[in-house]
Image (cartoon, rainbow, N blue to C red; front, side, top):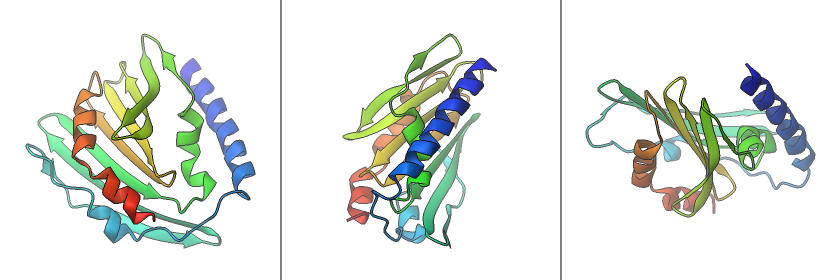
Length: 172
């Protein structure tokens, strides 16, 4: 319970900080979800659902997201790619955790760098789940979640199969 209160406070502060950055950010139209789906490749040894996605807009907020679920035995993995078009609220969860590290008997949260992109690794020992969240070109949020997992090694291998440089190029 204590960890959720702490994370809620941190997320709240990040939302406030992200809101204050809104005027500083240059917003752009997000890449269409159909282009994002092309990054969600088949993974050897995994059964995969059909990729899903959407591009939405409401007032000044525009966003695209694509996701795909994978299974290998009892292991389930979800990959999600979000393009928030530089709208700060789209990155609030990442910004809340990018400078936060914790190592307890229940969880580990720390910074990582994968394929040259900064990210966050979270391992929840109690619930046997892991997550990697990467910010690509300060625009695309790539999240890979898996369960049951006791570490993130398998997720890092999966991220290694994603063409993050191609994703970065979509934002130029």
